[in-house]
Length: 291
Image 1 (spheres, rainbow, N blue to C red):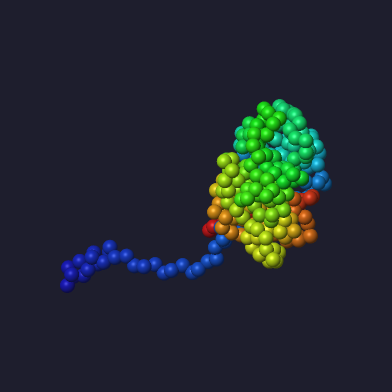
Image 2 (cartoon, rainbow, N blue to C red):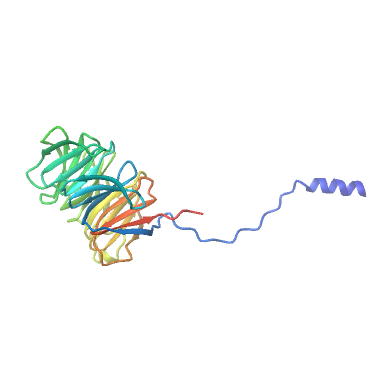
């Protein structure tokens, strides 16, 4: 009997018993963004962008500066009056004041300044130090330029041009070989390739746009992360929406302060930090970490 008991214990020592299941815990959604901070400014903000260095660039009415992601000043500043700006992938700094283009290096030294158009440009985005795109609100078109020429290389889209129809284009963003444009007059956002194909189409008209997700009411800016998360800022709805590269709706949110007017949106490359600029304020949102 004693021998049998020892054998029984040995044979049972390898058995595995199922552990009790964990009590369900709420997990934050990957598509949720929570406002974690904001900062007020004395100067009027025109546009923001997260640069390839991970810092937040802010264009005020008379200067361009950059902030750390905690919204404190980093120390860099270019004193210039410009309507719009863009940091290309090689860290060249493009600034446009109506019809004049100025290009600075990363340290803020001026390299090029020249007239590029007879009508004011509304927004700019750049692929590198050689090629850039301008949006013309007045003439409703997107035009591709080369840095060393005053003549346009190509017109990528214009009003009434089928699927490449842009009407009153406002914010634009360059990624790889695609230009994403907030076509405010059409209430949609279009991704247009340099070969003049439509990469993605977002939004459109709605009978009640303030209550309709994935529809827009005056989109004014667009920004992307490295995973092609597409963030669209709307003026009239006072909100921002996120889509994936296939055009699928992901999330919608807005500032708790619904009276302030948004002007620009920017997102970090990893998509975790989101910044929304208002006339005198920048709000920081963050994607919750999964436990």
